[in-house]
Length: 387
Image 1 (cartoon, rainbow, N blue to C red):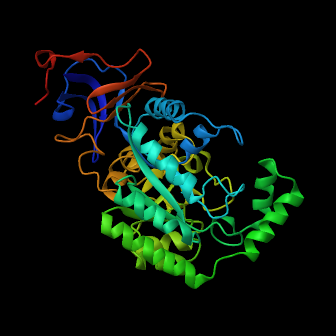
Image 2 (image 1 turned 135 degrees about the vertical axis):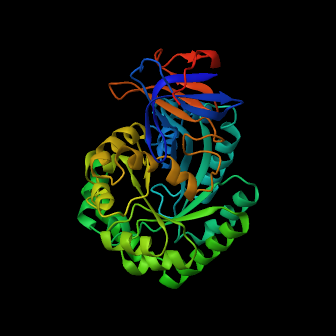
């Protein structure tokens, strides 16, 4: 099969009017086309290393549980329609779960195992991103069991103790919880309890070292989360993190990059131009050369607008901005078979119309989303290559 007369966004250049051949789900040839441009642009399929959407799909309202197949099916459709072809579903182990059960290691382990059993045969290539609270000593054994079972593909470590990290600004955290339905008195009482019950630093360090050991033993990449100081960024590099997710300050992001970590930030942040929690702007990080990966975070449809928002300031323009959601995460996560439009790579493609809408998505050479429009397919004989 050929897809022809489209603008091709390669990893190092743009072909204004080109065509590519797909055989057995792999791109086997790329040529320039002498035909009439169709007006469609072909991007590599987006790779989302951090999407928190599955937890909301499973519990769309507090204490309202949805079946796994319904939740996964809806998320799969949303991702495909946003041009995402590989997605890491973020599921959290949290010692400070609101009701003492959800995000507990029993609850989260059950979700991960059920999720792993539910993602085969769907449109998008789904993987599991276990978000591990570094204060949660009791959950380490559960995480080890999941890694042994091959149920986890990426681990990130986080500390959501108020007063540091993502929640350095305590008043903003209280406001956020009030918007979520808590009274101000409840929010302040819970915050005081979290601070009073904070885990000692030496225990957290032991936990980090144990998680790092497990990740290395099972060949799973580890990411840090919400680094807010140079010291924390250096610590995460020391224990083996390869990605710094959502650094809170420019100083922490710079330190992480200096230590060789790839910096990931949220596409909604880049699209909007600011963090919802008042932390580091993805646009500012990108302008400073401190952004390597765009993640859906909580909204996959933000990836394409985020790419557009970053294109004017990227040293490589659109090509460089597209790498943030394709080639760069593929490299960070060891996905050597995908991440760019190139011969020998999986035919994971997102096709966009002149109005910047995803109209078709291909996963492994098969259409996994279509709105009824898109470029025509053709036989080889119909393609006129420009020498």
